[in-house]
Length: 475
Image (cartoon, rainbow, N blue to C red; front, top):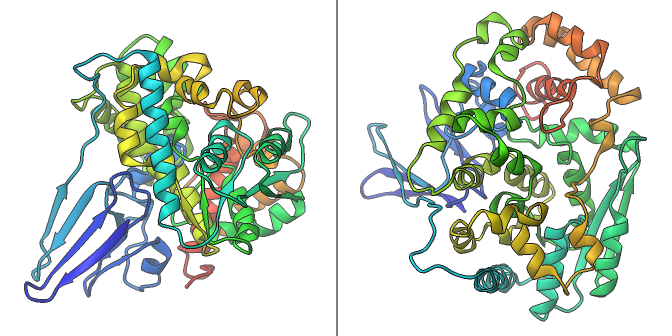
């Protein structure tokens, strides 16, 4: 949730955001007013918002895979309320913030066996799925990627007695290095539970044609290659249902990503272990990337070190997973799915981010998460409910290979964007850096395997379509 209440008697404005930041809340202060909205485009429509690029936000954007933790955004004049936080503004414009919930990652006083933990998580997950079902008075679907998380939601919904369940999958054109769909995994799940299954195969020319439209629906620049996948899938799904359940959050809550194992095996300080396997670029490369006006301290390293050091986490992986759940996931997959689904009036509900389930999961020993290659406890729950091929497969994503292996029309599109007059005059990126990316577009990837050229082009395109007065679409 995200809401605002006006107290007529006391002339105060009260704003609040849910514990895990599932719903967004942006705000701006101008000489004339305090404004708030569910996206930045509504605030940018005002003529007196400071649209200068925030140098700290920029550092986070280019280091944390486009995550800019609250309260900052990429734009100086727009801020966002942090998750689990309220803000009260009085008639004189004074702000008072209060954090009403904090997540800890500590073992319980009474030890539990693996069987007991598995049963507890299974029960909590059943309840989370049922809660998001009971409050729906319309048919509910599932965005079925073919991975463990969304497939398990299908099984649990069937277990809850849902009949005529609708599932939706999307695929794209293959590249030689990567397949563009996961239908071989989603089809057996749909068949096992006899869902009303819908598959959409979208050609690359449609992806490229619709890409700018998707970018205009991003409240902040998002580089995840599946953003456009969710945008195009949601367009189709919204014609059949108005509410879907989605598997976002499972990887962060239950330790599903490959970098957690690498961090656990790494030596060094807490920050060094994290940075080596997550940061898109180190600070030295950042200084080579952006123009002099935006160069400064290693803001991201400072922030991450502070967040990792917060009390209430027992082991190193507890620190990492809590950071991911409370900070990083908020401004990457959660925001991405919410933006792309709500663009079509489709509500996405995320049972894996039920706060009681998250609180329970944070108590689990890390080995019950990162074991079995990740999400060990979820794999135990899924055994017998899903095909073994879905459970034991390598971690997958909504793949859009053309945004990862950049060539052909996609390369030309990105080249035109970063070579545009607006980009060169903005001076955000150093020309030598852009030239290096363009010379070898497939040679420059982040530690999380994202294309650095795509990341640069996306940021510039977002600024042109959402901020620049001459080319802003929603202005």
